[in-house]
Length: 294
Ligand code: RIB
Image 1: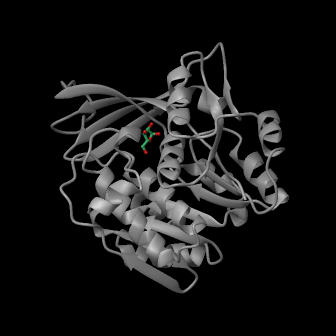
Image 2 (image 1 turned 135 degrees about the vertical axis):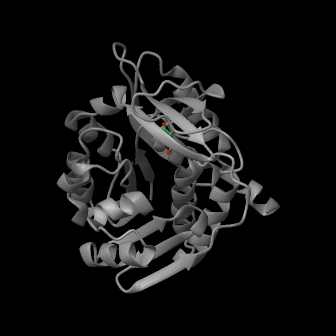
């Protein structure tokens, strides 16, 4: 059984702010740094650090060598990662304020994934293999349909959440992964309380397994009538960027290691509680050994 993450890769530009910028305002940042990220790359790193053998497919631009090398340094297989010589890699502009973040994406080469490239990559995978995706690349409907036709298991992190998500064949997705904002959007509910969001998700997606992360209030595993809650590990958060990606990677790795959802939730929650104590995206993802320390 092989695990394929067909996902985004970004250069992150991170601005530490004393407040999130508002319309008509010009504001100075407290600090600026550059980091490697993209929900796809972060999740591949998290899976690799959690001990999973992982293939990362996607597209970087002429400036993408550093991202490819970074994945390789952590043992991620990049055989199906392409480089476009003419266009720029995707990037993200991230404001961080009181440990929370706001992210603006420029898709770049992440939005140049074509049905032809999907065919080329999926040729190397078969029934029973696992496909992980996020909502940061193009041609996702095509990818989901083709992976499902092959008999692959599909996990979809519906982030960023937008109207395009409703055009995807979500009935082919085995595991949906959302935070509370994405969960509310996905369930099309006006409710903002967790009970309301969970109820609406159960009603809209009765057959899918769902992971709902709710920051400092922990996380939920939802499947039909089954709801399991995991408390967050109490830590001093500095930057929550990539906490969700860390959660996704460690949850999936634990399930692939045949752990029960409740135990996978506990491990994923522990991993993201380590991640939030450090600044940056991929760089803040812990290894399985780091989890022994808390
Ligand atoms: O989840 C965090 C990631 O979202 C960042 O690394 C950024 O690149 C965006 O994709």
